[in-house]
Length: 573
Ligand SMILES: Cc1cc2nc3c(=O)[nH]c(=O)nc-3n(C[C@H](O)[C@H](O)[C@H](O)COP(=O)(O)OP(=O)(O)OC[C@H]3O[C@@H](n4cnc5c(N)ncnc54)[C@H](O)[C@@H]3O)c2cc1C
Image (tube, rainbow, N blue to C red; front, side):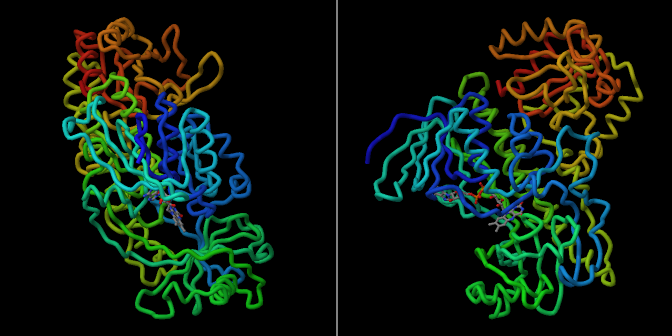
């Protein structure tokens, strides 16, 4: 076995989440090494829905237009909605409409500069890989993670310790060691890393079994001008979901299997049987079908008990699995990657203390657990759309899709609680604002995770508003990314000088954007202060991942001391 020089971050798994982590790390200046046991990226289209929050994150690293230019994104650009039918050629039973459900083509322009991008996961992964490599990451295929040990003397996770992984070359069988400061396990639901660390993965393992049949058949005529995301087909021969991959000849049929029926054993699905099922779902008995593949999969709902053990972090399906209803699973993984990347980078450069790394579990685990619950509620609710005669009403606790994309609230030691934010304010000018803020906080307390109107609460996503800058319109979200940001209003007062002093004291970059101020972008709608829950004399500290760390509704007596405390806390120092 040969020892290797050290890498800052080793990522196990080169699929959606491993590649996203490598990409976001590279954009923070950290060149990660990705090891993937396959010989190449998976060619299976798998998930197709990059949701609006994930698109915001991918937009922040300049990939939005590239994703929209993908062949599958072009073909699916006008698909929206879920239908129910006896078969594709047969009568439609209805369109799925529920108050919590937002169709892909809903207008989100008030909420976000981004919206859905439907594209195949294999095409998305190719873009992520290329962009990550261009930005400095290295991806090694045919390399299997075998085991790892952590440096016991540095359990606080500070940047000076290391983790040593043993990997095997799948071609030669030779093993070697890789030393890294940190390891990110993005090795999927069966994660070897998670199992070796003994991290419990509780939840429900069998919420449904499916067979994903990938096939070619010309269904142009039966589809007509309909452009749906999926069509549930229920008849005496098949129960499943038909998913168009190009609105013409390439499709996926997810067949719902009955675990108790021997005929539904996935091994019984020969190409002939798959062809029969496709014909039944299409409603065309003599349809010419080419079966490209059939992959059994199980819908499960599980969340790892710990997202971090020492220097090792779990992300994506290694940390959580959920039913596909809502398409939250893959997107939650992209959001794990984004939450973690800037924290690892900040600790590696010495800008942040190791306590910042604890916040990864504290922030992501409850939000992922709540997202899993929402996916389960949606899976339970879907059949209701097809059979109103058994209508039991909406499942209690189900929340709007948009709240799941944009309305989560993190809680961790590096985020101010609202009480602390308000302590900074000794001279609140607007009592009405104060009332609306405390009402919003109450909603958040009751629900735990979801807020319908975050209003700039610490721990929530910084809201989107269109601003006007010298070089054109931009979103508030475009101001965040590389470094922490202090947003101030037209009455910025002492904030810019305090920011410059505090940045020097902590040794970190801190950008100031005074919205409506002399050098800042203008606010055409005049809505920024209200959206962020401050006055024009207040300030908001936003992390590189676009999460509000702290805010001061007005200018406190000692601007410098308040900001110094807030930035130190945000950095875990
Ligand atoms: C047929 C199918 C359909 C799906 N449809 C949807 C959908 O409609 N909506 C949705 O949200 N999600 C869907 N998913 C789930 C979605 O694909 C996953 O959520 C997503 O891929 C998770 O990404 P990940 O990177 O965390 O894990 P994975 O994609 O599972 O990737 C893990 C990677 O780690 C590698 N690996 C594992 N062990 C090792 C090791 N020891 N050493 C090195 N490498 C290792 C694997 O080879 C793999 O490439 C679907 C999945 C499948 C299979």
